[in-house]
Image 1 (tube, rainbow, N blue to C red):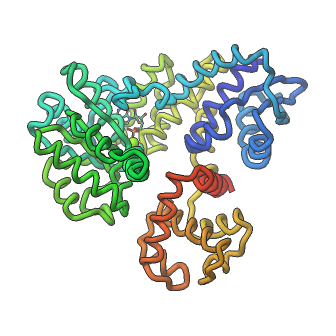
Image 2: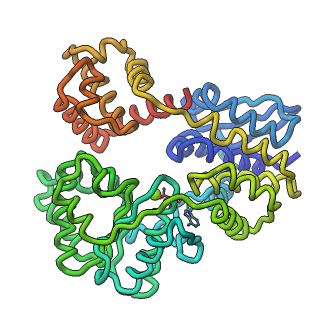
Image 3: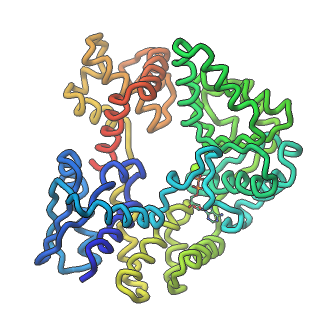
Length: 455
Ligand code: ADP
Ligand code: MG
């Protein structure tokens, strides 16, 4: 039988591809196998909340993965408490884990926001991303002077972040003294909100925020579509944009859609986005998907049979991250079994990779989950009651309809028995602010999301 640590690592590696990153770190950080005896695996966790979640929501998945790896394993039990004396050892293992699991945040440079693991070297170019790649290279050659802003859009998992980060890293390589800053839209939004909030306390927090952005040479903002509906953040961004632009500083943006399709985006921002270079990443064809798999396998130093690579490429068509996830799953299993696996096992391993654990969420589910969480009735949430214990759940439900489903404010209003779109917009803004300001609300919403994803 495998060593406990190695076994658990391979379980974690697989779980990672079945659930969101946020859920993964919430529920699986600080877990380990404390013993394996007679087919029973004991997993120790840090508190009873986590224990309950693993038992209720993830037990099936954990058992399945364990059983796939070692068919003698029949049962998993969860206990609270991790032995003190093993803390050091665990720390070490965790840091190897983190590398293997690709936890990017931990490697990012605090000042630049860049993660050195992203480079042009590892970026495969095909007809699907030729234009954005060429534009990105041109920007590296002369930042701020040709394509400004550079706006790259494309679907989830198709390499936007990889490309943006590569530009940042490469510019730093080439021009050592340039100030590069990569920031997600969420982070940018949080910074704006806290600058505004602190203005009352520290006189010039907004000024300080502006100053921080004013002397950047290359500003990279990822997933700009999330600024949709966030008026105050858009306003601050507009000023930052203008200052940088006027001083020939490079601005690079990404989005999951073109500027014209981002809803609730101020017209003056939209026209600025459209004023530079817009390049989209489309879908890689089968040949390219195979090339990507080959290159990733090589990077990881594993050899996987061609027919398996072919199979993965034909099965997963629309997302390079999932392609990589599938490859990792095979690679880990090979490593654990210490031999190349065959196509039948590969098919089996990939069968439950995306189907069972990725739920499609709809508006009914959201409203139900919120009602359930706050112990209220769905019909109360949909009513016009002004009671405090109803208003908050209602606002959160509206917020989630917007965030999870991208519903428009008028249609959210309609979903709540014909309320006005301004009510929906107000709720959305209110909760967005609370999520940033109030840890409790933020946690509540994470738990609701989590429950929906694993329901
Ligand atoms: P997005 O930001 O568009 O959602 P990412 O940049 O996060 O996508 O890419 C998802 C994963 O796929 C990352 O691990 C990334 O390294 C990898 N990837 C995406 N495009 C390519 C590519 N052209 N060549 C190699 N790896 C890629
Ligand atoms: Mg991204």
